[in-house]
Length: 306
Image 1 (cartoon, rainbow, N blue to C red):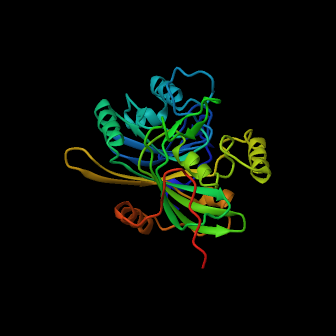
Image 2 (image 1 turned 90 degrees about the vertical axis):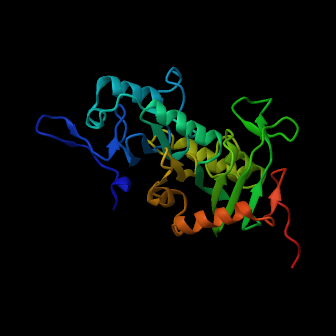
Image 3 (image 1 turned 135 degrees about the vertical axis):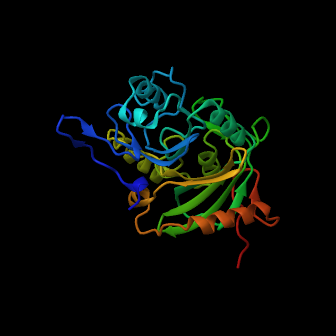
């Protein structure tokens, strides 16, 4: 088992202090967060569900990732001292309920460069979702524009008139009974983009409290809500699986992926672990495809009768 996939349990040393995994960071009294990648400019961690990625001044949660990072840097926690970190800041956001790869900049140069790569859509991102039902297409692209809901500011909606451009490629990987494992490759970075596009297709993500429809789906959401009290329990079956980009003057290739064993064990028992290399290549082919089924409204077109 790789260091990234371990879930270490702190051990007490002779001095009574918990011994920390050198391949993880620890914020406050939380569970260790595995470090998936690190060099002089970049750190990537496996963010657990429950942590908000927002400004450190946001005080409406005890799990503000950036605030706890800054506290750890100020206190010179062991993982900070060992790495000689003076600056560490998130570059992009993941929803509170979403777990997986989160990029952090270790200096302002990296923050500027990575932010530019995200803005220019030069960072390839792959997510895994477990959704309700079985999509009637094996692969498709959704280009439905997204805007803020006028009735609920915490929700986004498909808004053809005033919404911002958004595009996501989806691949149905496996299906069993009433759920499917779907790969999502967002080509833009709108708030709740994957969640809204899947909801529009009629296949909301399991455990999604904002984008649901139907009594059976509501029952799943209520069950997830009851589990929120458990530490780091993911409410949402959405996992930021992998990123790929080129960084710095030498255009160094950086590939980072998160472990899937816990995610699949919870949301997709009996499903096979997907092949990242094959799916990366397939997404590249679909981005160039002129025949890929595309929906501008979110709704999937019906298949012709056989």
